[in-house]
Length: 509
Ligand code: NOJ
Image (cartoon, rainbow, N blue to C red; front, top):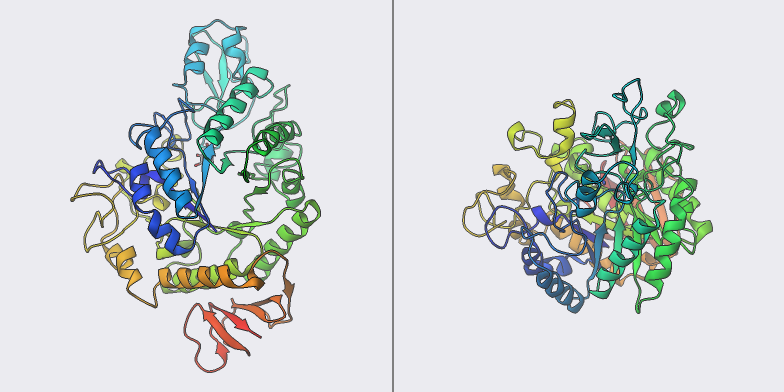
């Protein structure tokens, strides 16, 4: 289990309202006690924070908001001592517009070496005042920004995040060196941001209406999932393999099919990639089963282990996606038992173990996600899943930071019932369920590597066996279903021998 730490919202050591690395370090015992094997840290590098740190201006340092390199080293040492590996976030598709390379590009003429590290092009139309092609930013608006001398540069995300040109050997060499920098400091692996986006069709053609209909990562799309990205991952794999111990990658790969995903996981490329099928699936047995089967089916031939994700810092928290309120909580509890019974790696996004829901009513003035601004509020953005964690006490900031300092986003008052402190003392809490499930998962041989076998079950019910004596049943239907066997763990009370709706159980059979 890999625990995702969204650094700015996890724990604030100095009271400035923003989480930091010393804060993470102080909470490592909590993460270890939860049953994690590793942590993934979202970007903590120097950054203007135009996209919450996914706009990096220096790839080899720590932003003063988040601490120092010495804090990082201390965090790694403590994590390793606690048996936790550390995965850092690598942002190779784009830099910050404040990165020295981009500043140099702006100060240099068209055709210069400085501009060749990015994708500068002439515009269209008689005076070049139209963008070079019709590509759109993921965050809304055109994917091109014009500079004073009339050229345009590509930004698939915010204009403060210019895309690098991965055909440039200088760019490739720089990232080799960045990888080595963090591997030398003890990082156990990298989460690769926008791993499907680095290579672009060199002709930069317009996206045809067919591709638009096929969605953001349709096969043959000119800037997603180009074949050339695979060269980059083979190169990185050789670097990681040259280090002692086990160093691993997890790619953020948004593609349409699991066959496309599997190509990133060939034996000489990445070991793992996020598989977002489950995260995109509604609370529906057939959809969940399809997502699970598709992932396992596509990854088995390349020998890669699946990964399962229900929530992260980019999507609405799953308690809310599954309907919110009591139903959302019950379903999220059942989903946790389902995911922790599946073969492969499970990612837990900070706060899901407390049952946090999406915060929907943040004041617009406090929203920081560039999506909100770039779509003039039409898209509310991702701030609602990034609200700081409630640790303890009865009033904000709930122990997030020292004193009563305001966290960067306000926490709902009712989170007093969802603090880690309160849940740790309640055997029926989401936290207690996560701890129990992860402890069993760790000690049960049936829940290690391997595969699963589906058993016949009534409509709306998922039943799978991991070994002759371990079965997981998830009831996504509206009716109770009979179960048999010794109940090892369940996501809710089981009266008699019937599993209620929105409930899962682990059975010794
Ligand atoms: C994916 C990251 O998870 C997201 O938070 C970020 O905005 C984009 N990549 C751009 O870097």
